[in-house]
Amino acid sequence: MPVATPGDTATAQLPVTEERIEAFASVTGDDNPLHLDPEYASESLFDGPVAHGMLPAGAISSALAELPGDIVYVSQDLSFDRPVRPGETIEATVTVAEGLDGDMLRVETTAAADGEPAVTGTATVLSEPHE
Image (cartoon, rainbow, N blue to C red; front, side, top):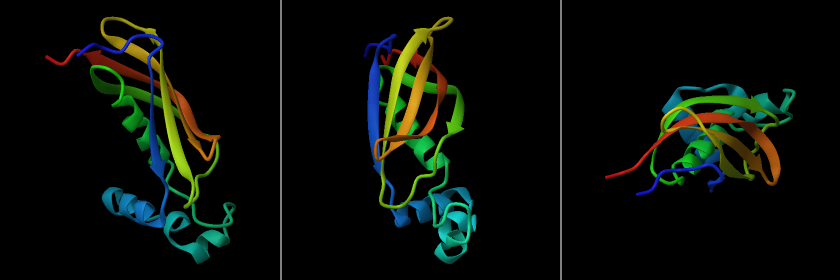
């Protein structure tokens, strides 16, 4: 299997549902009422429930896994640009920007919800051939 190189791109889609938000809360233990309690969340700055910020970030991880080679996450810088709400669909796009030392790569990452950037950043990954 070839390895990822500058210019390679990959995507992943993730529909955001109340069930998916509840499952994420269960797996992570993050039971913040901004995500899980519609009445509480309706009185917040978000005016309703929103997905955990790491849910769209997880879609970025899924997109990285679609790049060539065995991809190993080394680091990720993220900016949370807007909330994601149940009923939206996340489309994560990753683009290999440059090669670094050895088999390391810098990757530009974006998770957009219904076409608007929600989580953006830069990842460092290791891309190894799979033998």
